[in-house]
Image (cartoon, rainbow, N blue to C red; front, side):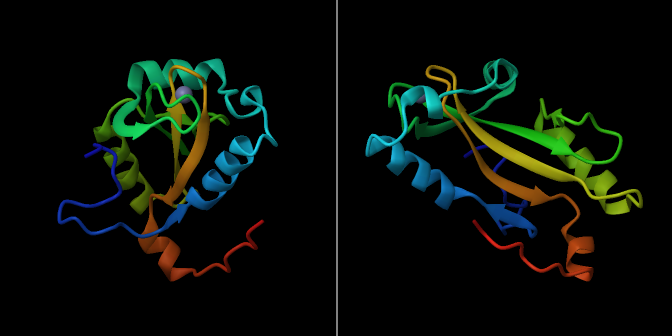
Length: 148
Ligand SMILES: [Zn+2]
């Protein structure tokens, strides 16, 4: 099981998660139908690939495009005082640290973006986004933005 799986120590799913698996599946279908070229879906930024090679969290999921390699998960955190391109999480303890900061933060929200990436072909897709301070999120319910 992935170290960055979205369950707490008791195996419960944590709140504030947005799952992007449907858009992922749609994209893969478009590729398999020939409506998208490989270079249109395997265009991971060199920085993402570097992060995937160095800090990627191994999975047993085969890459949906090349099927040669398994995908790895890379997590970025966005929030106050972090770089505009996000901060790449290099070890699971860092995510816990951001959860702790997020709970007490008054300056804004911290959000983690979990991206899957293939180190072989450059396929990448956003898997899920999660609010790192779901308790606060729960207190100020927001309308779900219209899904595209
Ligand atoms: Zn691949």
